[in-house]
Amino acid sequence: MKNNDEDNNNNPNIGIFDSRFSQTLRSVQGLLKGRSMPGKILLSQRVDPIDNSNLSSPTYTRSNSYNDAGTSDHASETVEVEVHSSSGIPGENKLKISTSHVENPSEDVRKSSMGARATDSARVMKFTKVLSGTVVILDKLRELAWSGVPDYMRPTVWRLLLGYAPPNSDRREGVLRRKRLEYLDCVSQYYDIPDTERSEDGINMLRQIAVDCPRTVPDVSFFQQQQVQKSLERILYAWAIRHPASGYVQGINDLVTPFFVVFLSEYLEGSIDNWSMSDLSSDEISNVEADCYWCLSKLLDGMQGHYTFAQPGIQRLVFKLKELVRRIDDPVSTHMENQGLEFLQFAFRWFNCLLIREIPFNMVTRLWDTYLAEGDALPDFLVYIFASFLLTWSDKLQKLDFQDLVMFLQHLPTQDWTHQELEMVLSRAFMWHSMFNNSPNHLAT
Picture 1 (cartoon, rainbow, N blue to C red):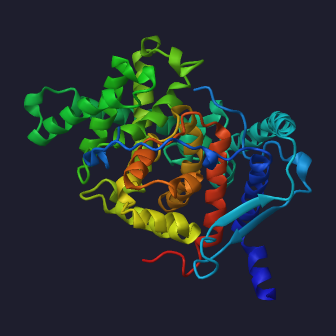
Picture 2 (picture 1 turned 90 degrees about the horizontal axis):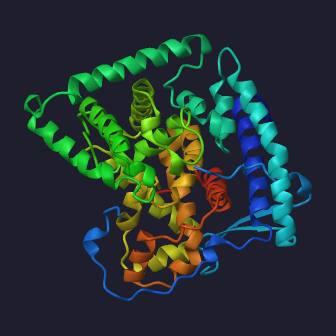
Picture 3 (picture 1 turned 180 degrees about the vertical axis):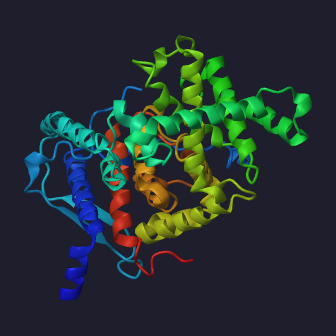
């Protein structure tokens, strides 16, 4: 034990892990006290037949509440985490999270809001300190960003987390200028040419992109602007041409949208519903497109197997998700298996579009703060996020037959979600990852 303690003391990652784990536990306390859980949402069953051919087909105001908000007044609380293996009591294979006591819900919400106001300024100061250094320490930035990034800092933070902008502030402006010019050259060489100079594959790819862009985030009117769709088209075509191993794959159009709104926020103010591309200069539009292109490239460089032929990377993660759900919540796993529901039938879209189509768009950038903070570990951490997301409706899922399961999972009731539900999903995911990821019997290989 002494040697282990010495090793831990000498490991700089232990401090970061302990800090984040403690913060996450405090977050769960604040989110659980006196609040109804999303899993209690009940919908009437739908009995009319469904079209199974659509199983794998897809169909900025935000909260200031971060993970450490509203917890300082409740230091005496504890969080109990309990795991029952499938070899124990039948029906009890669930991870349970509970608090030692529950306060009046309305009083708790008031205190949580006070806590958020008190801690937001402290978080902003921490970000400012990290970002103001001559060289940004990326490990510290990742630790902060995991729990959410202040809106106006997000463009800078995302560029740094993805390695698009260099940590050295003296080099940053020059690198961004050079990369933006390189993007313009790519567009000029491959996009701004007549179809007679494109290959047949290039023509077909551009045609598919042109079909998909109007379908991108259909619930947000901003994305229906023609100038927005042309920008998305240029970004996606340039990316696909420069990445021939995969080319364009449906779903990648969704992955551009968080970058697009984040980098536009440097030029446009207020609600996204009031944004107009006509308010931007051509240079500003080019800068936004270039930043989206390079950040999309950096993101997908770590998930190359997700979009190559047969998308083996996604299939591997779907299998891991199935095994993780079986370990955490065996009753749900068994029920879905008994109903003949394959995880690929609903989870493929989750991994392909990274949940963008499953949650309200105004919460996507908060989710992506955590995605990008995970860095190279993101693909495997997605398994834990998606398990937490699925098991939000554990009780509901066990009451549905096959057709109702498919309909429910294709149209999850997240339209009224707030950031509290999303923070709960992320908190559970972090704890399950901490508990299970290094367990030798965790996932089959």
